[in-house]
Amino acid sequence: MSILLVSTLQTKLDRLQTKIKQKGLSFRLLFRKAGVRLNPKNPWSHYHLAKCLLELKRWQDAEVVYRKTLELNPEIALAHHELGDILQKRKQWSQAVHCYQQAIQHDNQFSWSFHNLGDALKELEQWHEAADAYHQAAERNPDFFATHSHLADVLMRLQDWLGAVAAYRQALRLNPQHFESLYNLAAALEQLGDRPAVAETYLKLIPLKPDFPWYYYSFFWKTLQAEERLTEAEAAYRQALSLDSNNIEIYINLGDTLIHQKRIPDSLPYYENALDIKLSRHYPSLLESRRNNPDFKAKANRLDFIILGAQKAGTSSLYAYMAQHPDIVPALRKEVEFWSWKFYRGLDWYFAHFPQIPEGSHLQTGEACPGYLDFYETAERLRETLPHVKLIVLLRNPVDRAISHYHHWVRRNQEPLPLEEAIEAKIQEIEDKGRVWRIHSNYMARGVYVEFLKHWFSVFPREQFLILKSEDFYEDPGRSLEQVYEFIGLPNYQLSSYKKYNSGQYSPAEVSIRKKIAEFYQPYNQELSQLLNADFTWEL
Image (cartoon, rainbow, N blue to C red):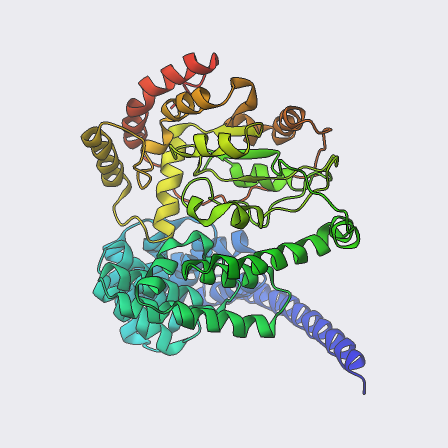
């Protein structure tokens, strides 16, 4: 029997089983409804009906029946627990906590109630209570991976590094190839200063996801370099490439491994190969024109535009939308960071990340690197090599930008402090240093846009800049893109939809914290409005 036939038969069988199950649930639902009609005072009749509705994912109906069950008998632990599950799905965290606590009161041996209680408490950022719930769950079921993993995540927030390491290791004993737990284990070990163990953990991550974009995680490369483990990383990436020779990210990671060994010339072919694979998939005619034309000449000025920033202001989305324009050929990666941190690598390395566009072509290319805006030397460096490049800047309400940046760092284990403490520490650092330049680890400093733009305007003519409000871009991306295309000299090109890229989910900050941040930025925003001759004061 052919593989195709077997696959087709299996698909049909799976569909048949699904239909049987659905019909079975429908018959059970009728049966349970009849049971409630016959025994309206029996709480178990209601419970079984609620359970059936739960399986059918009819959350609202199930909630009503579970509440009726508990009205008749408030001591049914499973009813409390399953009602809690429904409330979790509906993100009603406080009510879910109450339900799980009631379930535990009536049955304190069911590990799932403790585990799910921990999940709900974590959403409420009640870290100590969540940790206790997970500990209780782990005592009752020590072989459940997720309990140890979630416990470790909470202990990280509590800065209990030793406890987090122990919990992650217990989780990895149960699931040794869980990438996120290994990554977070490395972060906890970093906090303990155990660099050899961090490097060992990083090396275990490479074969699990050889295409993971480590380019954005400087600790990874710094640790492997400091512990002299880069040759092992190189061997791991070469092995991965032998198994998947068309994977763009593996080529990039191998090139980066060589870069950190200061083997810049050796790295260039890997970036160029990665770029050729990308072009072969999306712009084959451009690749063929270069390969088949012995007289091929690329544009002397190879970049047409750069999105300078700001960070967490929508640059990822803007660049992703622009990359879909038929006349724009994007870079190998969105952020090359050459004109800031990686300038020492040389222009050959930089231009290896961009397509070679033939002389006279209407095609354009560029990058988006929000770290350029507040890196002092970038403006002068750019002027020397790309004096006519078009510069695009997105400016987001600095209050929202700072809070977003804070949560971004929390997700990457780079910020252990609660929001209010973290903001106060960053403001204090600015006041102590008396400046906002050259403190790149300070996300409050990065919202003082006026200081950065004054310097850029002193280096480049004002007409080479397009300054957009992020809020306008979020509200009407099509209109903002129309302005962008007019600015860089391309015909307008509208997309059918505008997906948001690189956006994080987090709870809103308290009004008092927002006011504190807004007060800090107020004089800078007023000066910015004067500089740009437009309203950039933003509302709270």
